[in-house]
Length: 240
Length: 345
Image (cartoon, rainbow over all chains, first blue to last red; front, side, top):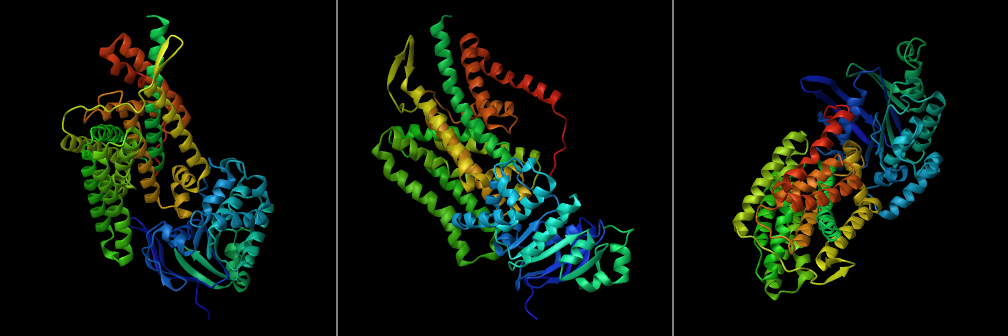
């Protein structure tokens, strides 16, 4: 087996005295899509924020074989981690183009102009909106901009937090198509989703999180066929 | 009062307003990027003005020693905070940031000061001595508090102001100083005599504003500063270090302060504590701009300057009171028109 691009070992995250993530271990193989599914409040967003260094965490985070515990957010970005957060965190009073250029803040001007051409090729809508302020974009366009901005930094691991949240079904389909096409470029993806059906369809490997713990894991296809998962997350009554 | 006096007062007001506008821009910038209300902004004006006045008479200014003090303290703070990961590379970085620049500037000052190089080189040297104190001040007093509330940052800013005023008294003494004008020219515009210094102040202020506009609109570093102001977490996620943004904002603020000091040193006698009132007037303008809008702050600054000029003509004893009264209706309108927002961290 090849070396994992990301490995979490017994990761714990607490808000004050309340622990939200209880000792999670997880790994992402290079070039694969791994998804973490689970209900609201399971600790998925907390987990991603801790991997990115936004929240302090216990346990160990290894990125491409090197321990990154205690690294700041900026240092993790420099190593090739990128997070597209649930709230997108765009620069709303700046143009689409400026948002993208800032995504490549750590790269050279030449790399930035090459990366922006690639992002525009992948998201033609952003090219049309390049002079518009980010705050005036629609929900789907914001998600595209947030992903485009993260890609501008040429990350090796892209973490997506609920990319389908609040989007119309047609746009969700577009976003997932883009996620699957990104995999072909060699970037590894850690995807957190409530939309379990779409996430399991896109992913190679999956983890199910409940109340801060991993309760099931395995190849995405076999989890999608597991009756318990089907009942809790894919059934008509569950969130879809 | 005839039209000549009116024109003269307006000229005076615009000149002062131009300087207040620069200070207001610096205050808005620093607040937007770091949430610090930069009370010591005026001290940078004093430092710049007194430095130029000393260079004018061929003496080594006290700010050269002050720069060493600032750099030394910043080096101590930075060294202490990274004591657990000392490496040759880190020591090299510390030297490059905290030892080499002050040393070069101070040696240059010792060498150039007795030569009396003339107004322009002296002005540049004065700015070069004062500007690096900005990032050092940020490293010493504000970077360790980066996550603190606005109130805590304000208290630290007041403390920085008081210590910087005290240091100024220590290094320059209580005497007021005035520098030779950058331009001795004067001419008449219709009935109005215009001094070259006033024109120089306005042109320099407008030039600096254009330069700042280009910096924030065109360069990636300027955009990164704006991004930090708009969304701190977003900025961190693209790899912009909050500390770097803070240091650059303070560098620009200190440079603007020193620049303003150099501009007004020939028209006003500056004492060790003069900067505070000058900074406060920039602050009035910044408040009118709501601490967010640059054009509004700049326009308000010119208004403050003109009000001040007329106030000193009609009721010079109440000049400062009248200027600071401007802030009351503005605050009143703001508090009535905006809904209260909890500080969101």
